[in-house]
Amino acid sequence: MRAQVGDRLVIESQRADAHRRTGIVTGIRGNGGGPPYQVHWLDAEQGHDALVYPGPDAHIEHPPGAGAGTSTEGAQMHTTKRWNVDVVISEENEGDAARTWAEVGMVADDGTALRGHGMARKHPMDMDVPEIGEELAVSRALSDLSRQLRQVAAEDINDNTGTPWRPT
Image 1 (cartoon, rainbow, N blue to C red):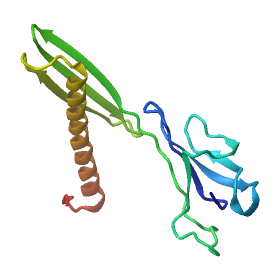
Image 2 (cartoon, rainbow, N blue to C red; image 1 turned 90 degrees about the vertical axis):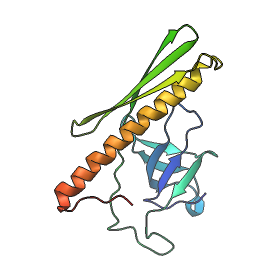
Image 3 (spheres, one colour; image 1 turned 60 degrees about the vertical axis):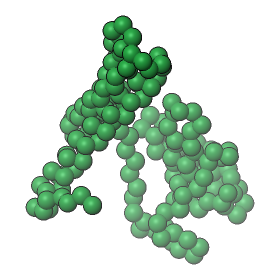
């Protein structure tokens, strides 16, 4: 692994409940671009500097246009945002049948709140595997949220350009 000042160090999460971490390399302590690296973490909660010895779950991303002999002065600034999506699942049983509802929600930086809804039904003849109903209901709620988010983007494109968005 070799890095230059200004590169991104990305550490992928091995756990499903954790997010990847991204930081900007601000210093190189090793020889020839090797670790350890002084890194400024971009996480909203972490946002601090640390000396990092990257493990096997890490990789380096070079800024666009960067390469051997290229200067990173005047390079574009990169912004990282985190959008959190809340998921609520409820299940109702009626004899051998069941219904699972999911609601997903997010609030944008400007205060816009979107909510998606999904539902799944278990037929009385189906095996009782609640995870399947949860997965289907959540996927449908996320699809609904995605549709709404595309609509908001289409309206923003129209408002800012005067041209209706045409999906491709």
